Image (cartoon, rainbow, N blue to C red; front, side, top):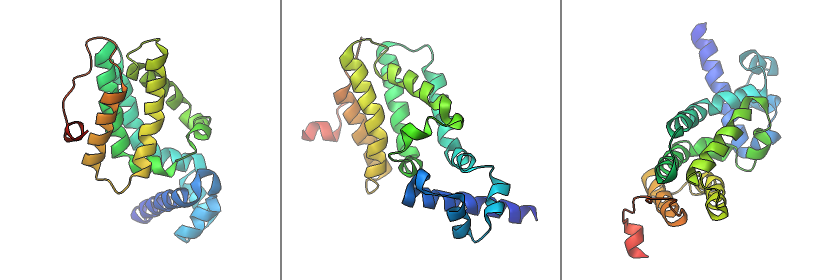
Length: 195
């Protein structure tokens, strides 16, 4: 019996991910998920208290990595903070690009939900680290554009292999971010040489 419950739990998660990808989080109902699994709405609600709980479990691995990155950035400043934030965020976005694609266009609304309220604070700290904790408008704007654009690129360019996407995004970050002190290490890449 435990195995059947576990299998149903997994089937519900997979169906939710597919439904969110097709119709968005907002456009998906518990009934839609139940229909795809071939179970009742009550069965879905037995496994997950709400649609928000379903999403929270789908996003839990990505959120755990984001929290780890937030912890790693604590106490870092200047170019060291910029480098750690850039590499950490690009790695996270590439690794979880499937999950990011599920929420495309719905991040702002989802951040208002209690289960995800802490993500806004982490995002603000990540933005500050990408800006090297600088108050300069160009640093702050660049950091915000990168935070919004990196996930969008990961969701959009599903045809680009992970390693190539990671390389392209890190090249972009190096070009966009103006180091606030000693500077981000400038390692020439194939893309840099071809430009």
